Length: 176
Image (cartoon, rainbow, N blue to C red; front, side):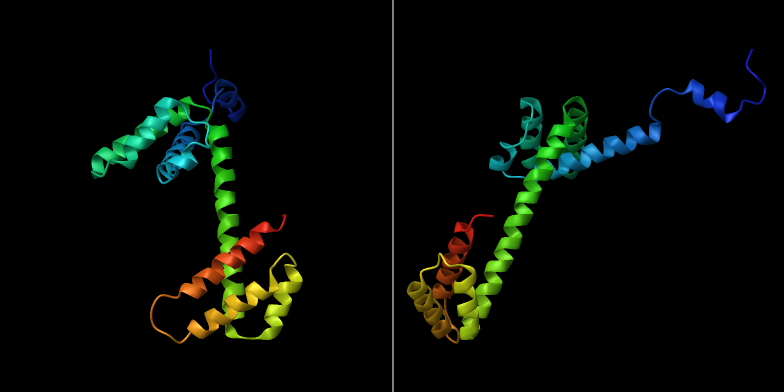
């Protein structure tokens, strides 16, 4: 017979699994990951360990625009996520996100170099050439000069864009 006033130790011994709240939080976390997966391009989805059924569900969600239908599809994706190796998917997604963040930071660096070079200070050009010895000095100087000349004009900034691409290629060519 069970005691009239059970102690906390008695209650703990009866419970063997995770709490309902914990299961619900995990389910919501997987549904949020599923929503994030629907925002990825097909090339990015190919890099993730997704089952065929989950991949199809994500593709369908990407083409669904009705609010209620989209909500149900996202819930279905969350359900499928619970049945798959969601830890592997989560880790692969985190790696993909880190790669995207690294690329974004690199583009910010390229933009900053481009803007400083166009500003016209020769010490910036010398600092860039010192930091990136693989750069073609003459070609870079010509491109900077063309971008500086283009600065005050209206129209498409062709040389500024070429300078950006050239700087990006130089910085990408360096090993990490």
